[in-house]
Every structure is written in C-alpha cells, then in structure tokens.
Amino acid sequence: MRSATRSSLNARLGRRRLLRSAGLASAGLAGAALLGCGGGGDATPAAVSGGGAPTAPTAAPTATPGPRRGGVYAFATTVDPEALDPYKIANVNARRFASFVYGRLFRIDAQPDRNPFDQLPVPDLAQSAESPDGQNWVVKLRPGVKFQNVAPVGGRTLSTDDVLFSWQRLSAPEGLNASQVAHVSSVQAIDAGTLQFRLKAASPTFLEMLASDSLLWIQPKEAASGLDLLTKPIGTGPWILDQYRVASGLHFKRNPDFYEAGLPYLDGIDQLIIPEYANQLVQFETGKLHSLGIASGDVLDLKKRRPEFQWKGDLSAVLWFVFFSPEEKDPRAAWRDERFRQAISMSIDRESMSDLLYNVQAFKKAGLDVSTAWNNIVPAGFGNRWWLDPKSAEQGPSAAFFRHNPADARKLLAAVGESGKPFKYQWTNNRYGPTFAQAAEAIHGWMTAVGLAPQTETQDSNSVYLTQTFRGNFNGVAFGIESPFPEVGGHVDRMFAPGPANHGRIADPKILDLLGRQARELDVDRRSALIKDIQREHDAKMYYVPTQGGAGVSFSAHHPKLRGIRSTRGSATGNELLARYWLDA
Image 1 (cartoon, one colour):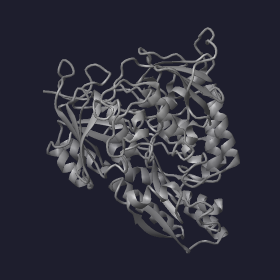
Image 2 (cartoon, rainbow, N blue to C red; image 1 turned 90 degrees about the horizontal axis):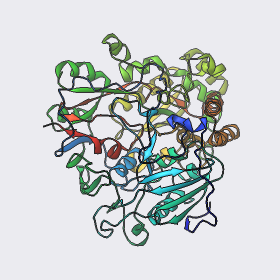
Image 3 (cartoon, rainbow, N blue to C red; image 1 turned 180 degrees about the vertical axis):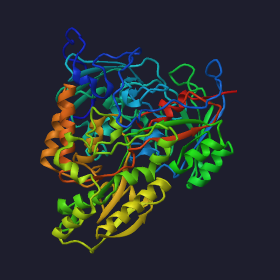
Image 4 (cartoon, rainbow, N blue to C red; image 1 turned 135 degrees about the vertical axis):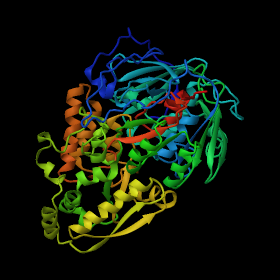
C-alpha cells in the first residue's frame, strides 16, 4: 500500500465515460459510475424472504404540512461509547458516534418507507465520483463544506488534505479495517478539491466502500499535530458534541454550518445511557424518550395499551453467532474438529429460537409482518441476491447442519470424544440487552442437551469482551453479534479476511480465494454466485455457527410527535436518520 500523497496528474484523463456494468448494481448500486449531487434515483427492491422489508410507521397522527425546526430528540443506549474515535475501535457504538460528528465522501441514502438494503450511495462530502473503467476514480469534493466552528479547527473549509489524513488512519497496517481497503493501491490529491483513487483491479463496490459507516470517516488534519479527537471530536457532521457525562449521556447540538441547508431540523439530541431495558421502557412510556426498540414479548401489549404510538418493523443484516478461539490460542481444542462445530449448530433449534427472540407465532396470529428466514453466515437481511437460504435445495448437503438434530449431534460428539468435557462459554451481559442474554442462555441449554458441558463466563463489554474476546484473543467458545455492513463484501471480509477483526482468525484458502474473486467481479450474477459459494464452503465446516439473532423483524415504537421516520442499513444514525427527523408542534 503506497501512502496517500499530494501530486498532480501526469496526463489528462481521456474522454470520460460512464461505466455501465451489471456488477455495479451490487446491493442496489444501479450501474452509473458517475454520481453527482442529483445522484441516487429509484432502485428496484430486492426480495427479502419471509416478508422482512421495513414497514411504514403505523398509527401516526396527521402530519404537519412539512418539517419544522426546533426541539431535542432523546433516545437511549445501554453503555457509554468505548471510544469517541471510529479509528480506535470497530464496533457499532463508535460508528454511531462518528455519524453525529463526522462525514464520509458518500453515504447510503435513507428514505421513508424504503428498504434500506435497496438504497443507493449518494454524495455526502463528495460532489461526484467518476471512473472510465471501474478501477481509476476521480472524486470531487463538495465545494464550501466547513468543519464545525470549534477551536482549533475553527470552521475552516474541508480540503483533500483532510481526506488524505483520514485515509492514512484507515489504511495504516495496524488499522482495524485496513483489510477492507487493501484493494486500493493509492490515493492522491489532484488539487484542494479533487482526489484520484487507483484500485488494484476494477471493483463493483467502490462507492459503497466510500459510503460504508465502518471505513472512511473524514477527520481534520489538525489531529496529526496536537488535536486529540478522543477528547475533542470535531468534524463536518450535522451534530456538535456539546457535553458528555460518563454513565449519564451525551448531548449534541445542531451544527449551524452543516452543508445541507436547513438540516438538521432538531436543535439537539440527547443520547442517554440507560443500562436496563425495563428502565428504558418506563422512560419511553413517560415521554422522556422519543423512540425505543421494543422487546418482542412487549410489542403486542404495548401496542394495545398505547395505540397512539407509531410502530416500525425492520429486518436488519445483523448476525448473532457462536465462534471459537483461534488455533494459536487452543491448538488441540475440540473445536479444531469441524464435527464439534457442526454438532453445536445441529443442537440449536432455530425455529424455537426465532419464536423466543421475535415472538413469531404470536405476531403472525396478530397479523404482523414477520420473517421466518434462517440466517446463514451472510444474514437473511441481505436479501435473496446475496443470502443463501439454509432451508433451500440450493444450500446442498450442508443444509443438514442447520436442522435441529440432537441425535446426530450426539453421534458427532461421540466420534470426536468430547461429550461431557467442560469448556468456557463466554459472552457479554452488559451491552446488547436482555434478548441477547436470553439467546446466549438458550444456546447454553441446547449445547448441554446434546452432552456438552459449557461453563458460562459473562464478561464486561468494554474491558474484556470487545477488546479481547471479540477480536479473537480468548480461549474457549463465545457468542457475539456482527453489526450490519452496508454492503455484503464488508460483511464477508470482516468474518474471513486476515486482520484483528477476524473473530476466529479463520484462514481457509478456498474461502480466501472466493473472497478475493468476489471483490473483483463486476458482473452482479457471477458475484452473487461467488458470495453463495463462500457460504456453502463455510457451512460445510461451520467456522462460525449462525443463529437466529438478526433474522427476525424487530419492532421499534416512536412518539406520536416524531416525524421523518426511516431506516438505514448501517449504524450511521446521526446523519442518515436523526438529521432528518423533526418533532411536530
């Protein structure tokens, strides 16, 4: 990887032309390699098995004629953000925080009542991106974008120097997500407002890479010479961090210099730290929170008691999965044998788990739109283009490992010779809420029922689980969540590419070959086939055991006054969602 440096092009680009390739339809990118401020447009929604497309908010009162300014929106999270810098830790909290303060070159469009996985990348800090061949890209910055008027940056204009500084942070060898941009050979500045990206090969997902909420957040170059972004984050985003009180919450105020005229509509955001879901529910019902994800067991009762609330259902691309310590940590562990991993998968009753987590049967009887899909290593939320249905004939022989079959699981364990031997089973109990804990405990019960002896260890999220276990530095078996990626290539890369984010340090040569091939394949149908081949190759060995967490429709409730409600397919809620919300009078 060559470091990003300022230079001039040695020759003029030839006649620019649009790259028309079906491969650029990846996850909704409809083939145009030239996107400007008017970019976007309608995309044909991809089918989501099980009826999991987002539903429009229900029971909304009559709306005002249009958006209005003012008010403070409040929502809750369970823990403090682990770092106020998305380059320091790779998790959903860091990405969510970044979306308030920072911008990206592109973002994923988010429109009311539209499936977020069918939305296109649209310009954010960039004005346009153009390529003659899908390999060499010229990106122009949006003119006049200013950083937040906070010292020492002081509201100056964004330039390519800031993008190059941020790119260096992302692509550094020690970077948490460096593997996801390893296909970019160089980034150079043509002038203060124009960049050239050179890729090692044509990529079907370049614009989605720029739009990813896991990758290129644009930070001021002053951070290279004294500005500590961990204590004083300053960006171009719609919200300025006004106050942060540990274990209490964060308050953001409106950025009056945000480049999108009129946005944000709200004057401020309160992100409250409320660890217990029961307390969150009380705060929501009393009007102190404007939105809340509702546990499946509470949906029907709350919907009946409080008919004035608005409701929205979403099928995400989240994956809850069982994973195993790397070979260097436990070289002779039983889970080095694929039969052990297959047995754990076969111990899980996925139908019962769906009902436990998402109240599927009761919701179906109540007429709610629910999903009955099963997650693969690619979550069901990615839709039929990328997701391989484990219950389909297309899955092949490895479909047997997804079916609940305790008898065959016991036979596999007997062949391995590991029945009854204790092992550490670890997960965090102070991060993802009570439903995650229910799932972790249910998996413990299913493993025990086939003769295994898991010994539960619950871990603190910030000090142990995220910094050690989730990054592969552990011994034993673990249970965790992979938060959604805006593009399927980022998801499979996170699970299998070399680097600290590969939870089990999986290094399967066939999967790595398929991973590289899909990253270069421009034809969408051939790329889809490669992504499904990755799933089949993985499923025969079950390096990770996919579970039903994330495979069901999750319902959120919203205050009657809230307007502009929509969904996004990542964690960038500060810009994609909250900058576009408003409160009715």
